[in-house]
Length: 234
Length: 357
Image 1 (cartoon, helix red, strand yellow):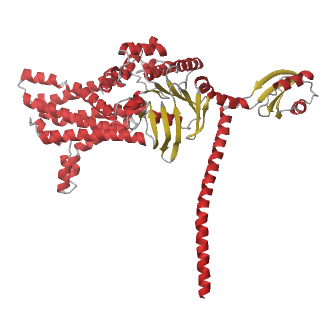
Image 2 (image 1 turned 135 degrees about the vertical axis):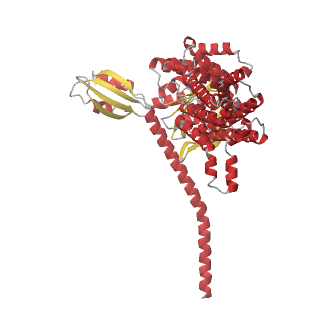
Image 3 (image 1 turned 90 degrees about the vertical axis):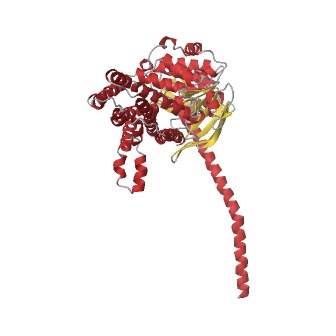
């Protein structure tokens, strides 16, 4: 599994696209920081982490999902991975942790903003910690969804587009919920990947959202493994 | 070393590999030969665990591929038709990745990473391009890097899918020699659709067509089978009025003689075919010498791969048709006693009815 993680990291940081992604990520997060923190004259980071940063992650996960399995399949390098003496779970987890580390590296840019707030105001470190924990959990769920979508198709463009579409749909799912009966709408709204993040932005570490994000991660990783296995049998 | 029994793979309604079985012993160099779409790559992909089979069992180095996939896969070095290379990596990075991926560090008999990779690079002769990006390498070198990744971890079995496809003649010879050298202490299964290649490298040849094994024989047997037909192309300088075809066609042991044309002034070309197990070359020479005809050229016309395929497939179809017939006959024979019993029963009933009336 460590070999796969290492390969993902080397490939990302050696590729110009990797640095382009980091640049876009930093640029967008700087705009959001300016909009939600500096212009609001506040030291509260919840809004920054909460609403808009998701859009950035959504697009970046989409771009990264192209590389997960679709590109391997397209370049026939999946033959090396699937005929090597590692299990499918090790393969999928290797890809997952590789992507998570890449994202966490991108997220490091936030420490610059923390430093800026610390110089000009007061940082609520408790709130910052819950936001960071929440971000890691949301990213895990998003990456797992991206991995699953990538395991479905050989087309890298389709993988990116489908991942962004699914993550966007999960964002606007509340809108569709109002067309359903109340009991069903409640269930649908609980499935909103972004609504579950509210507690973290408010500095609250609650068990249900943690369980929710971990469940989404595990389920989609499991589905990705099953999908690769199914393709081997088809 | 590799045991395959009743292996079947379907893609939708098409059966790509149909109930094939074979065993490859330790140290064998076996070639799978067949036209495109014969099922060679599918068979190799199943043995290496890349795709699953719909029926059958595969055992690699004593490990069942379904029950102990990791152990079975650890015994195999696989070079697919398109080498699985990451073009954004250097050769060094790529081989280091494969070394880690295969868990070579945990193997007892494997040297330390740097030494082992250096050793493999030396064997496949890629030391000179060790620090170069894979995407900048020539096709021949890419193939060698692919072979190097298959050799990492020192697997006892090598599976090579069309290892010389797309290479230039010089590279083909080099890769063939390399495979031969590797085969001195490894079991090798390779596929090709080039007969001469398989003959040059392999001791045993499995011929596949449309998912079936149509022949599994030693390379020598195949060569004999190919040489068994005694057809020669002959160019003869003889007087224009000489009845060459009539005279030579009447020689004992000649089965057929066929005029081809005249490609040089004062000569004729023809194909002469002898009866089985007859060498007509001496007779032909004596007869021509007696009549002062000059043999300018004599070329043995062996069977081409296509000829062998046609022959083998025809035999195979015939055999399958016979089997199907005998199965049908068997079914009919089984049904007949039942029918006759029913008929006799009906006749008895009718007789009884008649009596009652």
